[in-house]
Length: 287
Image 1: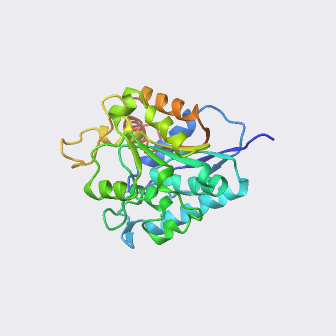
Image 2 (image 1 turned 90 degrees about the vertical axis):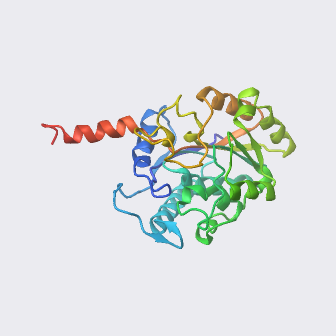
Image 3 (image 1 turned 135 degrees about the horizontal axis):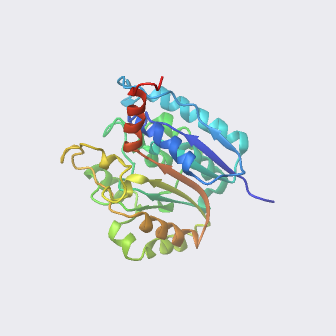
């Protein structure tokens, strides 16, 4: 029997409260190799510059929950063995990874390739893209956690590329004994990922790639490469230090020991394309 891979186009932007994530998702889908498997698109409101209201301390919570429900319904329709997600902000991994946890249980590991652990709650930060990994573990907003019927055991997580976590994040990672790998270790040989896989008896792997794990001087379509940004615009939030080659090497090592069943690409911010799109709409003869 052949396995079925669902491609999920999920241009969610409200989780990061950043409209360009919408275009970033569409471009990821356009740029990707063709697939002969099923493809679904989660309905997402067109971006707006209007402020997004907070509910329960979470930005645009009603829209986020509706999109989460729609994503879960589309995934349930196909019951895929594996899922590729074109995001959107990082919250897009919640429904797909929850499905994979139901399917593979404690044989599933999550390789979270990100400069940030995404374990905050509304008490620390209102944008839910920073809550997603915590919700998969079972912490944070009850309506996000309600979608995770099989919780993710923290020992089945490896966060790679993380550095300089905020105080709450560092405390959370320590108290939950979550494995991490610094950018330097990823660049050196990334062997920690295979040790983790063997130690935890992981057979299937869900991979989340937040593109902001990449060094913004090497890859420009990320938050921290925003044109015209000031030196201190992002405060003390860690910026990516990896290259695309580093990420591909890490994933190659991890998938040499496991069967990949999940892949999310998130937080694509194509600044030049966005500016060009806006320019085209303002030129004569274009309407």
